[in-house]
Length: 186
Image (cartoon, rainbow, N blue to C red; front, side, top):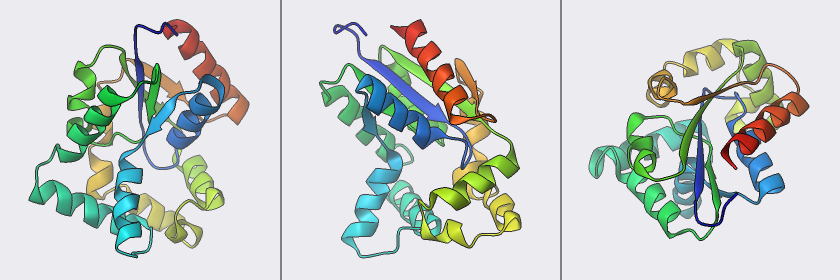
C-alpha cells in the first residue's frame, strides 16, 4: 500500500457471513487497523456491567441513534479513521446507510459485500461463541433475528458495494479472495 493514501475497507453482510474473519485477516497479514461499531457498543455494555449480547447491543445502538442522531456512530468512526495514522483501515460491521455516509466520502474507501448461505452462517455463529446468546440459539431464532432493525438495512447497504466476496467455502478460499482484493487496491 502506498503511504500517501489510506485504504479504508468496509465490510457489509449478514450475521455470520465472515466480516470479523475478514477484518482479523487484514489486521494480521496486512497490519490493518480495525475499527468497529460493535466495539463502540461493547464499551458501553462493559461500562454499565451489562451482558454482551445481541439484544443489549441493539437496545444501546437504537437508544444512542434515537437520542443523538442516526449518524452519531458513523461520525465517530469516520473521525477515528481520519485521525488514524494507519495506511490501511478495516471496518467489519456496516449495517445502515448512515454507517458509511461519511466514510464513503473519504479517499481510499472500498465497500465490500460478503455473503454466505443461511445454514453456513448459523453454524459459524454457534461455533465462534462471540456472544453468549448464540450458543443456545436455534436455527429458527437465527432466521428470526434477520428481521431485527440492525439486519433489515444490510441488503440496502450491500447494494452500494463495489466489491463482492462469496464466503460459502473454506477460510483459505476466503483469504485468497482477500489477498486478491489487496493486490487490486495496492
